[in-house]
Length: 244
Ligand code: 5RP
Image 1 (tube, rainbow, N blue to C red):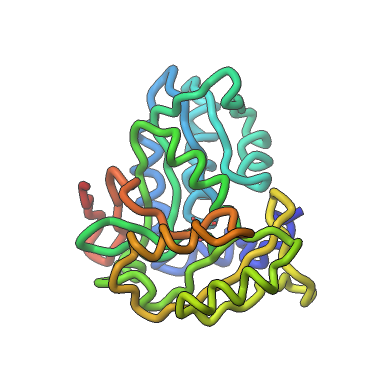
Image 2 (spheres, rainbow, N blue to C red):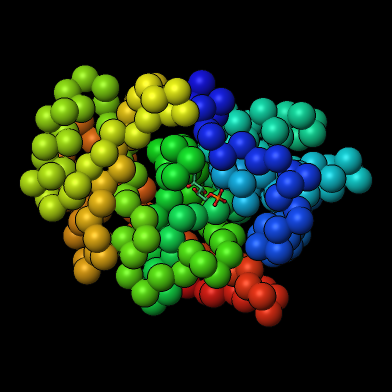
């Protein structure tokens, strides 16, 4: 599955000796503290979200009770390992609080690039169904303009992906088909491909997100526009909250 192919699978014992990992963990714990009894909670994906899910698991063991909708098979598996109750949109169409990481946060707008872990499509569905979307990052991910360090991941259908790549090139991107650690095409939880699209710094991410979505063969892009409620930033001087 896609989750098994995520080469970033953390060795927690190694990571915790890294001060940046410790900051990320503290920020994730702060986000997890927003979860209250009876809530419907979106569980993000990635290494920061993994700390948040572990913390929710710890609180579940203490008696906190909530319902969770995971954004990837990997996060589902981690939540299940803690005994956390997983539900679906069929019974729970409205999420109270979604907590997730991001790859870049634009400081002026709190718009995001997400999807380095390949879970962007489910992450966007869950974020779109949430009353509050709280993003947890370390300060290295704050940028003046999206695209500063990161390409925009775009999930595309397998059929015709080469044509879809050409249409993305027409928009000014340099697309690269994402490979897994075996050098074969990375496959998302939904069975699709990812094109990592380098646009350089993006002047108008709202317009770009719209143009990418209009291409036939595109499922979703990792541009998250106007969705963020709050960002918890872990830095050397502690935690900062940026509010939308
Ligand atoms: C996965 C994501 C992640 O939230 C994003 O890549 C951040 O991951 P990490 O917390 O490991 O830095 O969008 O699709």
